[in-house]
Image (cartoon, rainbow, N blue to C red; front, side, top):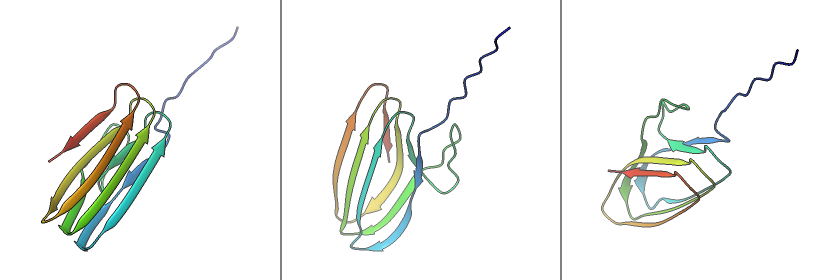
Length: 94
């Protein structure tokens, strides 16, 4: 008798809680099931990424399927580049 069990988890998880001026943030994730979230984030139980400040540059690259970017961005001057390649990716910013 053979028993096979599969366990699914995120390839990697990133949380960022940034405040202040002149931030330059570059984040890249390759693979499937990656998560970018906040301080209390975990696979399946996310809290938002939190970026506060002025003159901010944000570069996000997620390459793969079923990736999530969940964020709360508050800034006076925010320049962003967001690249999501793959299927079933989620991008939520407020």
